[in-house]
Length: 371
Image (cartoon, rainbow, N blue to C red; front, side, top):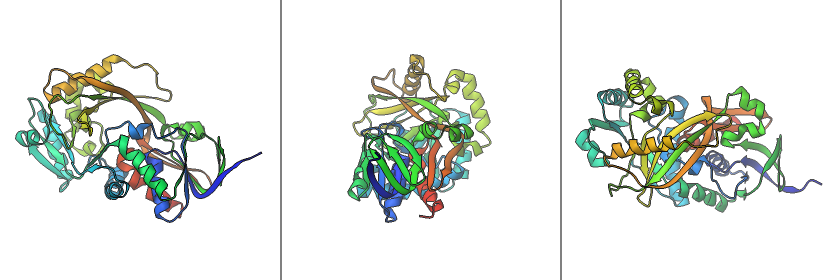
């Protein structure tokens, strides 16, 4: 016997930031919404990140989505009652190659990026010796992902969105979603399961070359005692964001960092940190790509992140409070929007920038569905 779990205009599978963004758009447009999440709360990449909406450093669609998402973050923070910091990002230049890239980037993003000298960098963030200058990406935002994601879910629930927590999806068909608690019926189904696209649509995942990216992050004590508003990023970060790829000097920077630390380039280091509400720092991160990531973590990678971050801060060592692995979807294209069946959309941010782009991506997906 088939048990009915209810009906809605839209069913969203996945309560991470991408799923919540689609639920928000749907309820804003007057639709009834049900969200199905296999865990008791969101525990994936959406809560295991820096809490950094880094729109300015993106390119192409990610830049457009990130810019559009900024206003939604600010509005939603006021409505749902969570903190959003209009802090921007400080990019730190510790060598001539990094300074050259930032100078070019400031021209590309005129009005959004302000170059800083060494004194101005030090006035904004605590850094060690050897800083030549930097840049302030003014429009970037910060949130606390551990607090804002549940706050968004609670806000949506207060607006009538029905959440089915601890519920596994077994099958997705046009007009229905079969779950461990019965069948949900809806004209529109949004599948926002991040890196687990292959669990539901394996051929689709293969066709789009979706793999899992396992990233490593740590929370450490802040030895400087300073209050740090902006996100802080480095030359390693410049190698990972699409906006910097437009800078003619980037190959020289890549050559220098590869010559100095080839093992860190191989590990996909994005050397950066943000400060948590309790004053500690979230630092990281390294990246490893595979359809099925190895379950074993090499301590040398965390040791390297700790050493590099200590050097950036100008301190001898750092005390670790927490370590974790985050996993997100990775693919050659930064966004997956697929229609495997009528009224069904599979949506995944496949570039590790879901917090930055989800609120800009979701309206476009819903527009494409004509709702």
